[in-house]
Image (cartoon, rainbow, N blue to C red; front, top):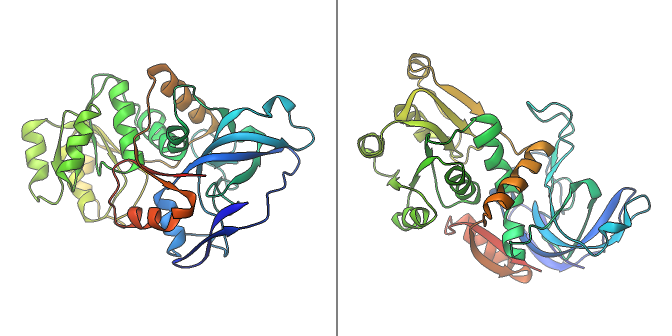
Length: 329
């Protein structure tokens, strides 16, 4: 089969590799589409725990089941599916267990023609989604769903700020919060991305390179009940300024590094800081139910052929995308 392989830091090749062989309880999925995440970029740059070379990255994928190992229900054969990228969550809904893994490292990922995965990771492709949209859903959708609902306990009518709109998780959080009846605002480094967010249901947005954006947000929108962040870094402290008393700050990434917390503001305003990572099998089921109930479509920004993986990675590394970058097999 054809696969994207990372052979060392910043070394990407596309070529033939051996077809996957399913182990007990597994199926082989012929992938129609896969999507990139920032995780893949960090693996490519050698900045991710548990690295091994060579590896096939990719956590998101959708395709058709073409083979099954003994013991797997043969009814899966020929079915159109999407893959749950969260493996071995464990028994505690509060947090993942010690055996938790994300598809794409250490297990071979979705940037390939075919993949072998446990049958328990499969779900039927939502009928209203294209292959590209289905591939764009899993990791970003699962992360956004858990952050908003099991962690932040978002309620209809609340005011939400999603920072760094443009990436896949932020776009999913925007769509999910709007569907839940929240009033949603965004931040971005790009006016064009704010405009696109408004087309998806955001009330408006603020440009975070402007040092005065928190004051502008409070004046225009008012204080926020929930802030959703994935960047961390120097700007993280300002998020306490825009939260209402008793507000919740939920975060699932640190693309700008660690942050210094304004501790006095946190305790005086009685804010809740909520870390979140991926999601449990129950979250996965909740995500699919939400997407099907509201006929939500993940925001696909660009589609590239699998052979054009190097260009797709370059686009993500440059932060040029708005929505998910998808590779077609």
